[in-house]
Image (spheres, one colour):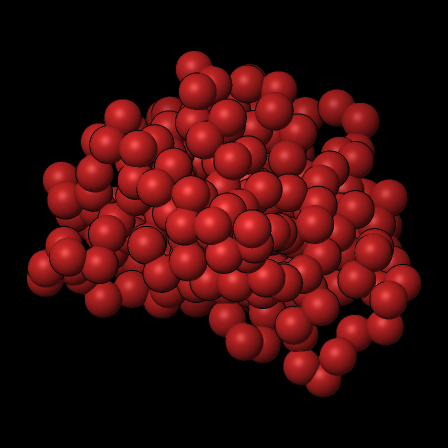
Length: 288
């Protein structure tokens, strides 16, 4: 079978976990291949997610690498044996950049999502008008059809939240609540939608106000996704050059620590609704 040209996010994650298994026991790719009956090239392609393996081969590799974490091996086996239809995001592969597709898959496969945002309302909570205004601020400017395509894609991503099947928590800095991308009218409508979303049982929205001191430094915007087991958690970070996904244990531990600090210092859900409402009234007064 020819190697995959564009492995999915989960296929790449499977490969990354296999590479970590190998590295933790101190094997090189050639040594592992010799022990499990694979060529060095096959090991490299497997760890890049470009070729698949069977569950039996997975368990052979785990045993050879002395991995005794059965929950992890079982979770990786599930990735191999899943026979579900491709996610809705696959329709956009080749139309939008891989970063957009990866973010949707990242969210769609999570058991729980938590976001921290400092510059704008999190994408999973944006209104269409607000989202379009954010994309319109991209520099160099995007053509109108690209803005519309990205906005439509972002609205489809919100199924994760709207369905209620994936619990979602958002820590939103006050700066994001006040940032205007297209004037006070669009922002006031967005804040009103945010209050409505906060009343869903599966959604938690908490504000980090300016006067909270000694908040930890972070990238500005990131999303933490919980997997079927903690070892398969990951974080996605927005950067000026696209998104990056971190799944190494040290990185994951750092993001967990950041979220714990936000949890202890952000306003409560009720206080946050009141705070958002007060900012919304300010915006409404500016458009009157």
